[in-house]
Length: 117
Image (cartoon, rainbow, N blue to C red):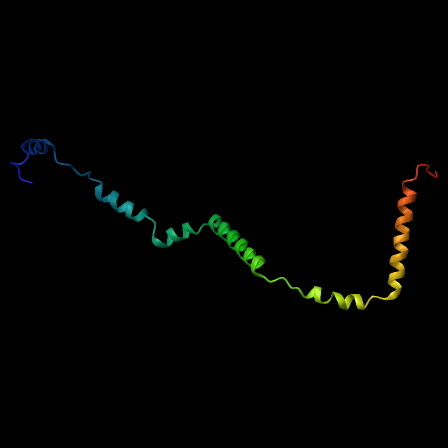
């Protein structure tokens, strides 16, 4: 930009005093540089205990969900049902029949209108 292009602007810029630096400018800049965290300190601050605990909880939850959804459920129990029925002792049928009679008798006696006491 030439001074002839905008004479008013150059007049205003000519009247503005030049900026002066503080005598402590260099000291302040060096202090700021020393106080600025190093790359290692910034990484260490980013991996705080709170963030690591939250990230661990999320990771455990995701692994658990993946195992629960992708782990095949074994269907071998239904194949062995016929073996279990074959191994039942005939005396067990008598016990079950006796239990059925006992349950029926208990249901009838509990709800009687006349208590025996």
